[in-house]
Image (cartoon, rainbow, N blue to C red; front, side, top):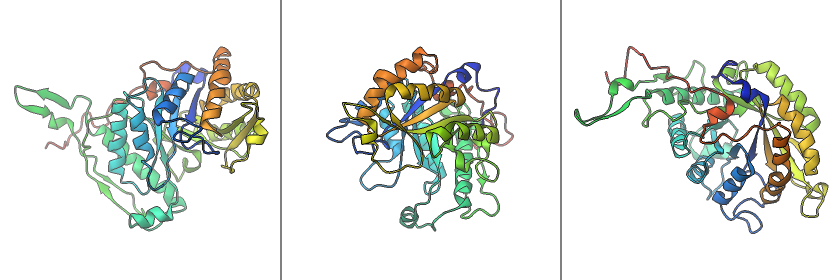
Length: 366
């Protein structure tokens, strides 16, 4: 979606830090636990005060818990600078609803919303919604279609479609609403079509930045130009930089790169190695002191556009990161300043795009 010319030189010089807010905490001390934060608001405000640029919200089917997008929407009105980026499934959630809910998140957060588009195999979810299980290459196919539908729907209202014309009694200029007329390509597993237009106005950012795992982006999967950033994983911290370079070479410089890193720090009189007992996530895991983490992140932020940290304990690691790691990275010039009253696109150095339907021959009002 973006081009290399879109991303400013400022965005390329220093990196940003994201924190996984509630999928983190391998030892269970996320918010809502006796030893963690009392509320989601407390946790996201602590991350914002620490200087994190982005808070992400993991998602997985779990009875009794609101989904990641709803938690991000709750965090929107209580924060001012931190971008809010939920994971939203592209396989078992209707694309029209994904698009409209994310547009609403952009409004309640003042233009700080993003989307981690996920495509995972969930047999239980497939059974619950009456679909056959989706696996293999079909997962990326579902993700690509959902992203394309969402982008078209976000463009389906021109920016000046809401006119509030009291004299004529018209709230909307129907000539500025547009059908998206999307149909899934030939060979699609469970084909569908979306007529449009959307049911809410164009998001504040025009197009929300979309992130996806690098593993599902590329030739024959989700097109690289359909996303704005990819999440890159590696088995060890030592291999993460090399993997970032490989992904950038494969996808080109127009796509921002975000490295994924689990973090366990020496804290509260306990050595990190004694606390690193949680399950293996598949991500690179840093185990050590805050000072050594700074030395590790500084060159990594020069290679990647950003790094997403997954703390072992949200309460414990966030405190250490706020006290020692982020201030020192800022002092060294490795970390960009938070964008005051800005958008997530501003953080990524992306301009606000025009609607693709701004001058169509056919409109929804005709």
